[in-house]
Image (tube, rainbow, N blue to C red; front, side, top):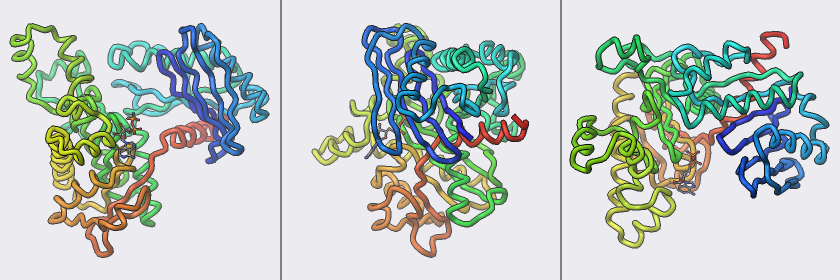
Length: 396
Ligand code: ADP
């Protein structure tokens, strides 16, 4: 099946074309609405690039250009030849709990909950409508980052706030990065030759945004991100868990409003807030230069993660594997080592030599009670697979 995967932003469309499990082309439309917009397509077999730089007025014009580049590359005559299009949707809200075929009700619901993910959902909606107008024959499927976390029990997803906030405003933990946690846990089970339905794991998606997930019998039972992607781990520029009473305190002390506080917590905090760098490659360089704030940021990042892994170890009946993924998880052996060495007493025994030279596969020592793995995430492939499964099941 030929499936196009779209991740639409407010001024960009990221896309990848799959033929079965194989990615055949990828590309990006960027700076939509600006004078210097650009559309680029890469043939993943020949590595040939096709591109155009010109003002692109809106998403629909961008998608038309993608269609032209596909035809020029010879990879796809017309977008209408696709078997389906899978859309990454950050937030499914309280009702969109399963990935599904798009219809009018789904579009209305994504629109209705736009206030829950104002930076993402409205843009995703434009992406779907663009596809519906550009390739009228192609069925669209929505894949929600929040769906994997719907298996959390109520005592894990509820906040201890007045119950009516849950009833009236749907305030609860939703969790994010679900497509990634789902993909890497299935992949890890496969690598370890275990059945996903009886596989227990802790998966750490450590990118600019970072979250950790406790997986029991292949299903999420808890995750560190919450109502928004701000809760939990310390991230590139996000603070993660803090004392909520700091908000009124800081609002008073600094004479700032809640909007400014929101910006501070999301954009000016995390490891960046501590040391002025949010990329772990820079943090590593700075530590090498003796920058003590960079050392502190690194230690804080690891410490928070160690605490989360410890708490998920406690809630799982048994842990088969610890999985590292995303930019930091896949590339930063020092973070992985810093974390695992402090968890050795729980049975996480890392092989420091293998770890130092690995970007994928098992990195624990033979005989470690718990397997430790690096699994490169592939959210697009997971979206393509989910899309083709849904279309196959519906006989489309
Ligand atoms: P996003 O959340 O934006 O998708 P990624 O998963 O791509 O992020 O992760 C980006 C982050 O990964 C960078 O900010 C950086 O901290 C980290 N990273 C990427 N490559 C390396 C590397 N070689 N060594 C250490 N850290 C890296």
